[in-house]
Length: 296
Length: 198
Image (cartoon, rainbow over all chains, first blue to last red; front, side, top):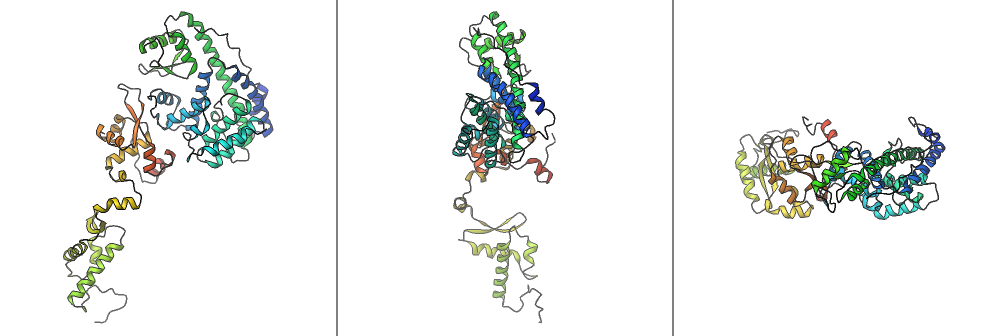
């Protein structure tokens, strides 16, 4: 059964930093943006290091948002990406949109950049270039968001039609500079108003990281509340695999009743999830009577 | 008979019959050879005499080409030289043309392109789109050629597979990624593709 101590709320990016990057952001000054990014990322850093029980769900939810953003509305909103991923046989092809989602999930899980860059549009694949660029910027002494922006610029120069690759590398470099065990998909969450080859790119990047850090902290707090509700009802669940089922919900964005849980059948799991929904401790995400998916 | 230099002599009245025939033959052959598309009869008629029996002349050309690797065919409303079928493999090898490209029927190609643009898409959705039954056999034939594969299932009764294109598909059509597919909207705007009545 779950009984870890309640996760303390992480600090939130302070309002005096976020106001610097609010508004339309057309003329954000570079120093303001960098300052805001520093303040926001330091708050986010605390959240990352907590390694909360719901960290898996947090990372995958961010990956889902990043995937939707990087697809720019083509063939993918959260629901259809979620479905494509959940309804693909293991080892099967989730389709081009599903593969983009899989790539962002892999980034958030700490997989190697070279493996995911192809799905994000790096063609032809060039693992040496990716690794060399990543290493160079991850080891630089520049502040994390600046190193990330510079890495993105270098990668975008190589694949100008696949900006998501540059953004993923930026997230990777940022995480490396901050000492995180795996990147958080962040830069993709914010509509970037500059291109990597613009003069204003670095400032735009810093502002975007500040806002993305803020949103990530928001999501972290939301999931912390969901975890609390889940823990509250845990003692009421008597099914054998209930602990594993709850852990599955904390570890991913969406879980289907077909998930293999020791000691639980498909129908048993579905009954458990439906009970959790009744108790207000989980949500059914699709609104469908069949092929249902459950999450925090 | 005086001839102005600009006037093209088709009657060739000065030549003996045999030579005149040879000259007409040569002209028709040259015109068909030079044309990028099948040449209509009327165009050929412009280079031979009014009373020239064009069909006999074309028969003679066919006869002369016996044993050559190409032949005279009537296609697309006109005449053209086509290489003979048995040299197909050699030609495909010379230009590195994928053998499977030629063996797709028009409907198979249409279905393949629909899958490319709308993947993942189920067989039922394809049937609706084309307004005719897209058979399991057709899907199977595309799968056998490794051009499509089963992708995510659709969350509707029966959980049908959505089909997606493969890396082989990209290779065959010379695409690096699916992003290299021609922009459908741009094609439609240019009048090269029909917008579906969605």
